[in-house]
Image (cartoon, rainbow, N blue to C red; front, side, top):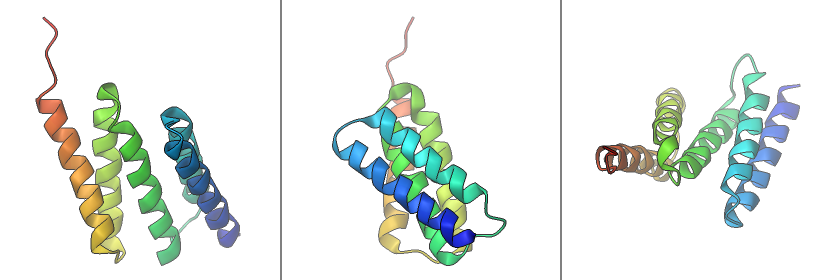
Length: 116
């Protein structure tokens, strides 16, 4: 049922948060990704499910932001989260967080040392 998928996604989000707090970035990415898979099974997102999905994308983007080779993935997750935010009302705090992460990833991309 939709509620089961939402609960599963929230559970994966918490596991990801725990891994992130322990600086286990790859494990956190896997947890957030599993949460997104659970929500992708829904034909339509409720407001609560959309909020969880936005958080999962934002949190996974935070992980990607720590790895230079994953900056494009960070930008993609942030852009997907912003799209969802435009469809569902969310807190300004979450919107600012996602916009900051996307901006920081773009800044870092432009300022990466070139290998030549």
